[in-house]
Length: 60
Image (cartoon, rainbow, N blue to C red; front, side, top):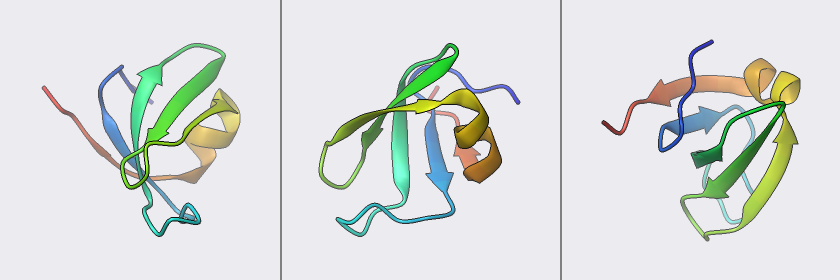
């Protein structure tokens, strides 16, 4: 899977704020994601993110 920094990814499950879209801030063994709805940032293992991706929008 080719995911780059600044891409917007849509995950299967929603964040408690109601949004299921995340901006990718860091790519590596872990991903740093920022919620588009509320701005909350999380670190998630790569394996978990790749398993739960529904859609990828390139921001470039």
